[in-house]
Length: 137
Ligand code: CMP
Image (cartoon, rainbow, N blue to C red; front, side):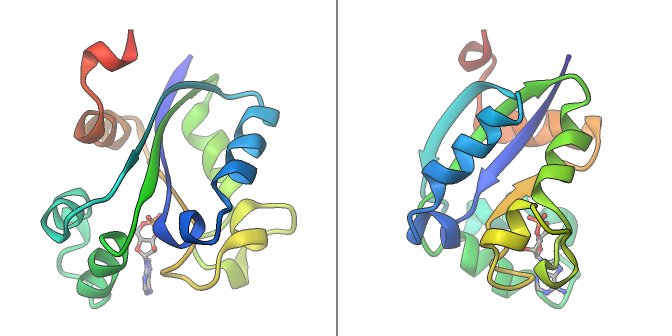
């Protein structure tokens, strides 16, 4: 079993897509081990995306992530990191495969509906950014 962090981003929550995305998560066979609605401050968004701080899109990305509520989840499944990234599709919805969440729900490369961890070490850091050990028992 593996765990990954998923975020339903502010664009998707604002458009009332969270329920449909959670349904797709459940239908794909993930166990939802933790779930919380949050509204990040800009500082908290900057902390989460610190690895991207040198990128030209950093200020815009962190402002977007702080623009409204989001839903954060811990998903569990065999090979959960890859499985969730496959269900999301490519970062840029224009490049996402048919049937993926981003193809269906994303509006742009920034307003791309969902986030997922990219490796086991980043999943551990990202999960602990939002959830305490006691939330995951
Ligand atoms: P995510 O998977 O959360 O990881 C980093 C985020 O930065 C990404 O999804 C997009 O929302 C955003 N992003 C990545 N590349 C670009 C880009 N070229 N322009 C704007 N935003 C981007």
